[in-house]
Image 1: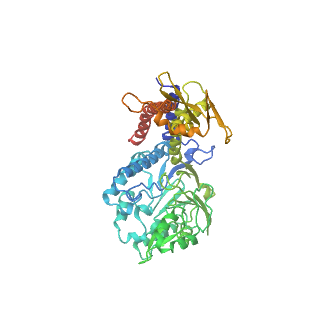
Image 2: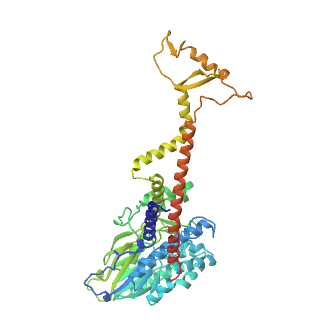
Image 3: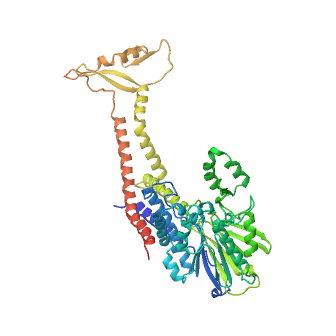
Length: 541
């Protein structure tokens, strides 16, 4: 018979799973950034996504196709797929823009591994459906985890051709309403000018800059623009920024360089690393100041969108044509160091505006904190276990039942100690029956002040207290024997403590069995619900 308490937890768990696996991804408060009085037809609606960075064998140093890696990949992928299906697609964007880093180990993956990651990417974000509902207006920006940096390009140029074959050109521009979006391959901008990819990127920038009658522009760069040390990123950033000087002090400790680089990357240290043999870029998480100024003065954007940092950041740059706002998007993945994944909704005006900065509006949308959802699952399991364990079978005087359960559980371990204490606080009295056999009767010891001439009265006999030790020594000799000559049962032993100990064990076992039965019922109801929610979101629609 299922108790009301078990039914209660079945309902609580079902509601929790529905929220954590489904309802939390509905973002009713996230809407397009436009005035309520405006006509929605006057805007192009664009959803912006950054740094999915699909986990692969390079992410956790695990063997390819290992069970742990497969599990981690699945739960990371399903989170992003839910975000796409339940949070982004329902707002019906006209365009979708990805700001780079689609894979984690893109440049080092074999062609087979890269294709496998590409298939996962297409499935997670339902690229076919996106292309259908947006009329093929899905745009991609190259990231360092997709093609690497300049130092890598000279050794493996095939990663560039592999990327462009699927995602298209790395430097291009497109229009949305009265706004022009300019996408540049930031990984090549700070390379040597003689390098072909670097020169090609700057040639593109120079060609764009020649159009003096261009509409308001939005610059798209995967790597953020230069920002001075200790620059504030606004209230929506969740991780700190460490001063550039601290990074150089840490990186000069040769024995710990690699470890410290990984350690400081957690804190988003601003840095640039170059190869020793040709001084090409190996890693950077911001563009140089010179490159930044050149981009701003050439393209003259009203807004800059970037990714790469995995955390939100809003910075204002000062260019020759005025102040320029840069918004760095956080990652959409919950496994990339940001507890609060996000995406952006952006509107581009279809009408000419007098102030170019009013042509574009943005709204940052936070996704569910998946880490906190899993922590809540663990806490709820602990609460379920404890409540079922201590919940009374009759009545609601829970504090009394908790005390009873604790005393019974402790009684299992303390029974032997209690017997020893009782023996120390008792004395034995010899009693002869009609047949002349002697028996020992345990009685509580009465403690009285001892004196040298103290006498103890026992029945009709009078004896000194010192005589009790002699009696104790003679117990084994005077104990009755059975017919076989073996010592009989100890009459001093009582069955009370043994029975109490067995009763405590049975009580605890019954409680644990009840917990197991209740949890089994809760699991039988909710595990199918959980599996159904997982596969309902994972399978293709």
